Amino acid sequence: MNIKHKVWIEKEGRVVFGRGRDDILTAVRDMRSLNAAAKKLQMSYRAAWGRLKASEERMGMKLVEIDANEKGMHLTSQAEALIDRFEQLERDLEKLLAKAESDFQSLTKGRS
Image 1 (cartoon, one colour):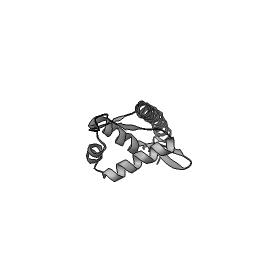
Image 2 (cartoon, helix red, strand yellow; image 1 turned 45 degrees about the horizontal axis):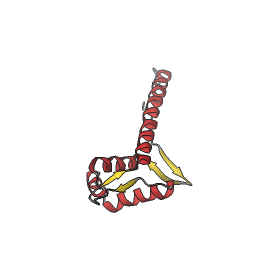
Image 3 (cartoon, one colour; image 1 turned 90 degrees about the horizontal axis):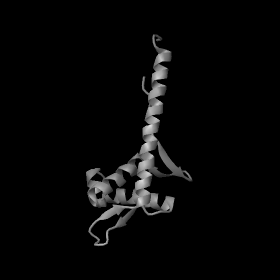
Image 4 (cartoon, helix red, strand yellow; image 1 turned 30 degrees about the vertical axis):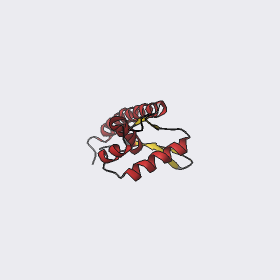
């Protein structure tokens, strides 16, 4: 028996952040380029850019900035904080669901 879940954050019924946005931002941080991040995630640049811009607009804050030399990109401190908090939320949920899964298995043990 397994409990499954997905979590994302919405504003006015529209996604602002979730696993996919987290993956994009983490890849941008690692690659220092949205184009390279999109390639790493096997998605089009346009799709990655669209999701990033939609999140920025819906949250009313910048998530990435172009480096001064215009040769790369880096995350804003707000984006770093958002990643950290979202990933903590996912870890907390995993712990909660692991406990609940164990409880359900105990409750249903030996029943068909």
